[in-house]
Image (cartoon, rainbow over all chains, first blue to last red; front, side, top):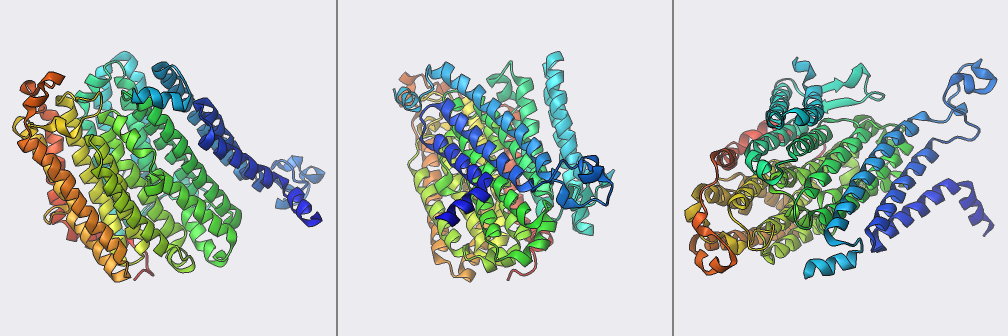
Length: 130
Length: 501
């Protein structure tokens, strides 16, 4: 039991990422309201951002700028002192993609609402069948 | 100039897309010529690249001059040089054909439509040409987002089906991104060739296995592999016809190209077919996809929905061909990728042309019964449709036969007789599907539906600028059939990495 707690606590960021991923997938599959589904989609994408950022983190690591390092950088650069900047840069792109997806999805949700007068999936389907 | 081809095929349409949008505020008539010009430049560059690859071997282009593991290289070899030509040729031919239907369907949105169109093609072309796994994700999202918007421009339930497509597509792309994240965790690299050279040391790592599962599941979602195909039929049926004859031939095919690239060049055959034991399971799943896609197509009354389910079956053909894991199977998968893009373009263009002229009895969805009498009124359109249909069935002089032949012989070599049976079953179902249409079109009495406002009397042949591209594609199906041997011996043979028997 103690080991399990230790295993979870020492890598809690990865566990949170998994929980967020599952919340997002759950919302997208189970919720009937289209806006809730869109929120689920956004949670899913945010979980992936957390995953990438966790990958780049290092214990006692600082910003990858030399003067921020220990002794203001007056020594040969040691990679272990600095967090990995590459996943951060990748996630900047992923954030842009997530925002664009959210925009397109919300625009379509507005169009759906104008068309059927509701955002509830079941109601929309009964209206389509009529 | 020719050294810059890999950059030009992406940059020209990307800049043209923004230019089109700006110009549409000034003069809408300029949008179409700019779109045609940009895609024509890309097509010429893609053909130039294919020529360079054929004479001198693979081409590597370093974006901004940064050397590979750090910078983003654009890498063109035998596999993607061929796919690039297909992508841009399909996009350009469809663009030429769709001018009138765009003008009629969205008279005040011409600028947005052509902007999205050209951006979509940019995304697809980028996915094919890039040698960087993360860059591929970004371009995948460019193509997907513009695709959602293009589908959402349709009438009827288009917005709802596009929203469903967004949900499924985002899950797919996110899974792919996660897979790349896990690979980065193990290898510290995002360059496809670099990852492939690092991976052999960590084949038994669980992280690589998880990465593989995430990547492949994400791609399966994006390509509408059978149990994950739910988004496709509605999205493809409700989309505007000018957009769908672009999206239907290209999206699934480019995703299959990405799968081939990932399986053969990122994870390499020794991992995908050797260390992992999933090939046989995936061939069984593909056989299931083919059978179910064909059966579902058989149950449809709407023309476009039927064609959409045929695509679901065709995705099974190519996935199965790849996972057979032998030279014939993979040759068949790559050849079928090229052929299927042309065949799907042919039938969807014909369907779009029919939609342009025939008023459907159910709003927005052309029913099979609406085609009654179409052979006498629109003989050229239907002739092209029949040629596309014969190619999908797999009748010898057409290209569809040859790729199916490679797939069949691959199935026999690998001993996967269930895949062979599924292919033959699907061909038979296609015969039924298309001869039903031919029967309705040829012998059907259009008169009995006169009361529902079906105006057969006013039906006539489509305008020439829609017909000429359509007939060109139909003739192309024959030409590709005759030149199959050249395509296989000069291009596809070199696209298959060493180590596959």
